[in-house]
Image (cartoon, rainbow, N blue to C red; front, side):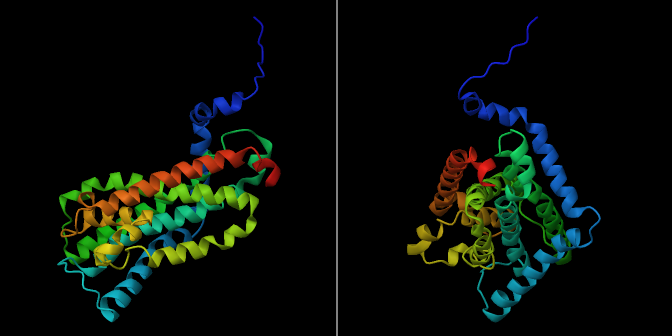
Length: 275
């Protein structure tokens, strides 16, 4: 029986999405490698995942709750309200930072073998769920400290986990493609994360934004994600699914993912040369 290798123009392009499935083991390997590098034989790895959201919560609770005296009109402890917003935001900031630098960090792999490069930033976003689940454990501890019983909507949270993934994956994918060609983009990413924290409803509720500006505010894809998480955790939080701003954020998220994949695929063939 003769084994023949068929070389067909455009074959890689045509089978790209099938190759994503064929190379799924590489996805698992890269994800597990990132987790081990981040946490194995380190103290600050796990400790920082605990301290970072706790310290941020304390600062936001003091600044917005005590100094600014932000009126939340809620019977739920303000610390829990803030932490409900911090959960998705910390995931977003970690995922955006890790994925935007993922291609540069895997230079040797990219220049030596073929595989769909989309796997690299996707695996970086997945590893950010580790920090997320650590933060979620802290939230459960806050429930015990305050004697707080979350609403039944908390079981809807996995839906917003998926939305948080795509809200992070879109910008991260776009930035990592640009970062290969324009290396100075790595200096812009920390600014995006810092600025985004204050224009997202982490320390306050998006309902406090004037009605006439709600549509513009919701162009931030994290608004819908954070409002969704807060609805799942805070008893008297409004249901975002019943208000149009959520669907604006959802539409922006879908559009950003589509544009990011388009731009990434457009630049992908030149990654090995540029990197």
